[in-house]
Image (cartoon, rainbow, N blue to C red; front, side, top):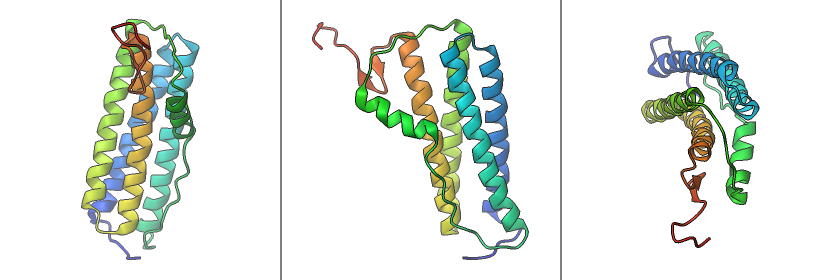
Length: 176
């Protein structure tokens, strides 16, 4: 483990990542308030909860580094969303959602936010010199990917796209 100074690129990346998580938290809380469907509210509240947890993990690491302590391996357990998404994929249950245009716009904005956050974390992992920083950023990218998958599945369901978690729900020739 190596010590880092305040000008280190990974430290700067952590500060930016904290800002990203704060924006995500505030955005998902706002969408939860605006969403009429209870299922939609729950999704946004869970996403907000995860973003808060991301921020706490990043702040803890930043505090240690700025106190002159070395990088630590950070164990990031699977979030509730990460635990649910694979199970839902395996079951491929047909769902039908109902949402207004505002909720669809919110989900699309959330989808974009999660995609950009994941790309940011992957880029920072690539640039990180410290193995612990690389591992932290990659794990956060995975977490954001699970959020993206959940939001995409909700949009697919609402829009009746024929796909749910990228699994075709029906075929055009009426064969199942």
